[in-house]
Length: 146
Image (cartoon, rainbow, N blue to C red; front, side, top):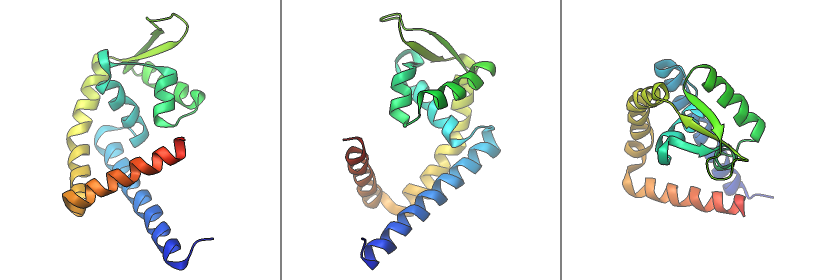
């Protein structure tokens, strides 16, 4: 059981994360026509070597089930943002690659999105508190994954 102070802190974490993610999602939907979840997938592909990731690795990295990622990638593929292919390393897995229209979408979306992140996170918290938050989230992720 949590103490009263722990419960208050926990509720602030939940409310803060929910409010932040909702604000970022709304900004992306309004300005780019994609959800925050879509942005995360597309931006990870954009940062990957050759803009390509193995589907199973991508699903694991973002905490999606394989079927949930497949649904998103099918939608992106239909919209011309990605293409799927057999793995170039072993031929068994499936890789997903960000196409040029996907690159344009994520680059355009990133301008307003990252400004919003800067405003809501870094300007609100300041450098030291933002670094502490990042370290805390890293530690929580490790605890969950282990």
